[in-house]
Image 1 (tube, rainbow, N blue to C red):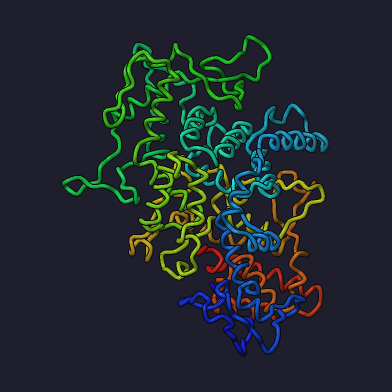
Image 2 (cartoon, rainbow, N blue to C red; image 1 turned 30 degrees about the vertical axis):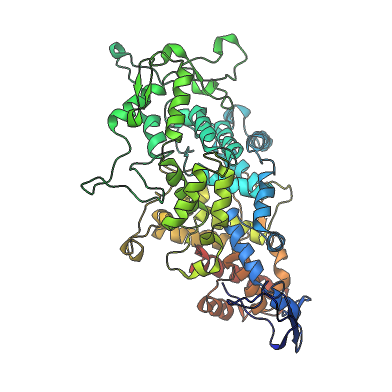
Length: 599
């Protein structure tokens, strides 16, 4: 991190020779017993703020705190403006995390309903026939709600964690859920609800959610009826193990794979295990109906279009396999148990598998901090997952806090490690641009449908083409990353098409004032609020320094700085030139490697 000393310190007097000796450095907090005088107080170019000699030594006058706060917020949120960065720079990170735990969730379902009703009104007001409009919210209403909430809600950490969980516990628009906006929204709200809860409860809620039941086909999953060629569906049984809990191979607590006596990796489950788990997840059907008539009350095999997607699935015993289930490592569910008891025991069995702690911990680290956490980092977080210090396993509050405050996330000396950081995923680049620059809409409706960005950059929440998310945790792009036995998950969607598409998207945000896109675009366009940064745009150095804090967190290279400065210095010294200078600087930073790789 760039730590520029802003003052020439002329004389330093040590008033107390008994003061504690710091052998690493003097300043930025290590200033007890030190008196400072200087030739003058530093005034930033174009700013009314000054930093005295005392402020420089004790750290309060350094930009480094702003830079570190901006970096922390890039890991913990979807982006931040200068006001939030300044607030966090003056706050203990642990205290801020604790305060975020108490912020109520910004739920999507109410916004989905609002978006549907208003979009329907706009459609009919413009001559559309009501009969031609969908009779329930669909995917675009979910997208509208996601952006509305994430650009306005106060639960910044919860939203980021829920999104991270949605990349592990995947459901997607690109399925039979495309026309079920309420199901998507309620599923996301369920993730929000459990983001700071216990992973066991989350895994159970995922198992019983009708959106997951549709996506992985264990809704209306019947016991075997051989004479009718009906057999339990194995999709969910497979993915709850492979993707949601234990993974493919047995792990040590540091995330490394165990090996047998022949040096081969040890599988966590077999095909027969999948079949046994499939029996567990039989008999689950609709928990509620939107129909007002008894003819269409909730029932097994109910039409998807009549299901109330806000009600968890329930057990229909007549369709549940009651035979004994032989699960992992000799664990057996006896015959004759109620169906929901079978489900609860199976989920508890998986939750307590030793793989869960390193498997889930590593992926959460990857989503929030870095692609290649050291074995020690994974082990530290897995230890917290296994026991939060109070004997509780799976406490996500403790896990998230440990991830964000770990030395590998916070210590500046890690920034220079060649394996530090990760490629920012396209959606977080998008949200950070919006939040850092600001946005404005005359109706305060910040809707955005994901199709445009999905097409150009290859990503949007809940638009993954498969249950494996947009990228795999172990993906290795060709070249130095693979050659050094590292991984780069986000590079799986980083190709010639999406690279150019992202650059074109930034061009639209910066130069065409097209920040968000809707099917009702002409009704209420949302544009970047460039006015927030214009006061800093007259001087190239001041502008670049400001954007370095906001976007690259003090890590902008000299080469990038020189390229941007040379590109923007020729604009006129007037309001028109200021705006063009700002837009070009934003564009060049947003497409630079210094920004796209979060260290």
